Length: 454
Image (cartoon, rainbow, N blue to C red; front, top):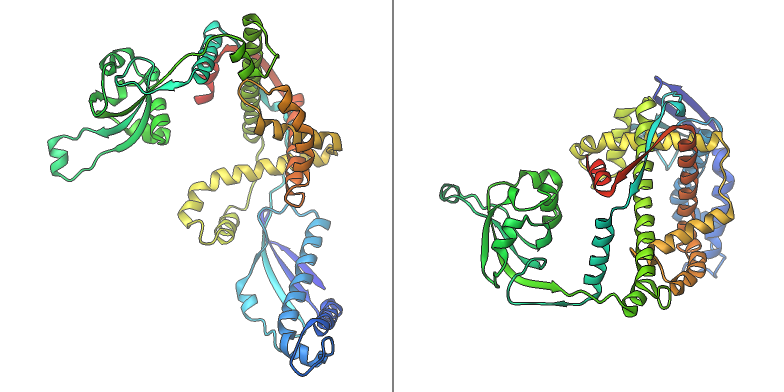
């Protein structure tokens, strides 16, 4: 076996691998013997087919398999032993592969293109972060309790629209006569409109509408949250939602009115489980606690995203851009076009840079995931699958331990590997936040939502 690395520049290299007969002969002969024992041919007893005949029939396919096995193992070992900062995977030089004569050659030569990450240094002390703490307002709590009461209060389908109703119907663009003559079709989609998200003046126009009746309006002035609300009800991207303008018509097809459940023991038990809450005061405190937990998760998620963004801003890593674009195109053959690769490349490149930094931090600090941490990661996953906005009941919590153990071994341990990777990632995030400059800032829920969407 002979492997030669030729570095073209800081981020591009070629790898030439020569596989000689001695490198694969033993494995090749062993596989031939296996085939001789298993193959069944008319005129021969099982296990008695001559090796020479087996070689004539299957020798070429066995040769290809064993040479490629030796080749791949050798390349992986070389990359790991030499700690090459590989990005993407080695790309074979097709011209070399096409020249191989599997019928007559004993020794084989393969060439690959490699993409490498350029040398870099990171300095976490240069990273500045803001940890937001959300101050709950009475209206935040009232809104959640109102939603709980509506969710648990059942629903009816009245004949006429009233303020607060959910109204399903057809939203369609009102085209001018000229636009129609020119063949324009305009936007049209079935949507569900929550009247609570409509400006008050327009709600007044909707009140009293019955099925098949309609309302005309200027779409940019119809919703309280403008394009954000349009995006939510239409499923369009924010950019597409912002592009909608002019006159629109909404035709009512169905009306849903949610009733409000009473604040009593039945509601308390439905939301938090039997006998967890026994009074309105306890219910209010439990709701506050659940809201705070969920908002803390939101602020932590935003902080973790900021960690990635700020570290990338302060760390310059050169990547083999053209190589990576070729690799993305080849590894996603039939799934991505060249234009799509170009369009998505910047996001992919930043993801690769971040992955390199995370791996390096974990390696330099010798981070390890304990069995307890792995189990806790699995439990968190189970809780996220079973839990609701108002937390989990004790009965559901009792299921977590057994389910967590089962998930660790599911899919041949693949989920366990994912949990281990996530636990390692969490360690790196905690390390970065500990080394960075973190400013704590108190904001309201509305202020935080505005920061997130900016």
